[in-house]
Image 1 (cartoon, rainbow, N blue to C red):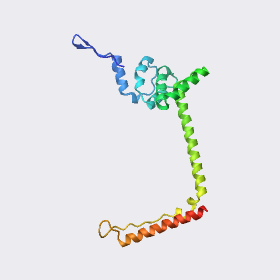
Image 2: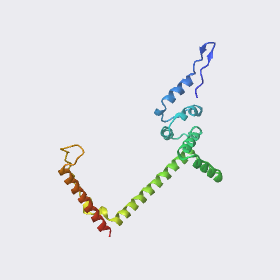
Image 3: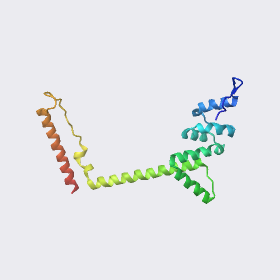
Image 4: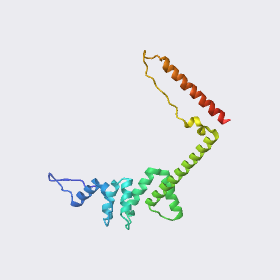
Length: 190
């Protein structure tokens, strides 16, 4: 993007003030907001260094100015990167058939909204299926499920690798409680 420094008679060519400003702007692109009336040619050199969030921030802050001559190709690249080349080709084909042209930022935002809506529908459907399954099984409404089970762990006193009598006794009680809970769940299902 920047002009290469060339050696002329053993001396380096000094970069122009514009090149230095562009380099500084690229280094600090995360702080950009409203680009005001900045020349499109300069924006063409600066904005390709932005992330999606940075570019979105610049677009939103620069209200009243159409940045699409500098950003449209960037939004298309982000669209293709995030949603795939096949999806991008479908969008281009649809625009060609309908003889309408949209800005790629609008298409990107519309696709994000579409995905968010599909996610909400999927989550709602999953919640409904879980409620339906819970109602069918009925185990979540049992009083045994609502009461926490207290388990006391006694440290091993004797030899390593052997269970003490107290520990075996507690494990047996836990096993019995588990079997009773399973029996209760089985009875509630029928």
